[in-house]
Length: 86
Image (cartoon, rainbow, N blue to C red; front, top):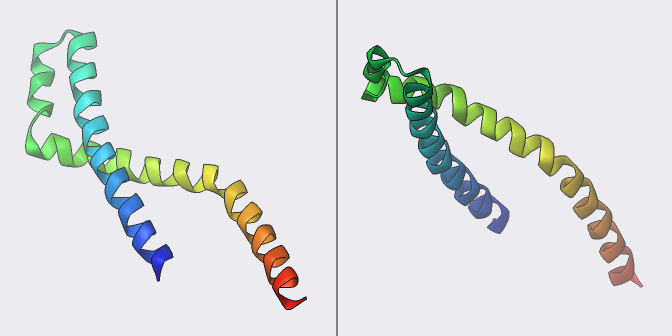
């Protein structure tokens, strides 16, 4: 049950991070493109559309980088179960 609570907390943190990255990427695009017409992207709809792209990308990256950790934890759990049986 604690693992599920931790997962919810991780997803919430990643979601907040995705919002901040979305805002930053829109602002980055505005400043580095130096196109004043792009300021319209800094609306609620623009933020949501950018968030829809950024949030799944962050979840995907987290899943990829967590693969090795998951395998290691499974190995450690197997070893602990064997030691507890003895």
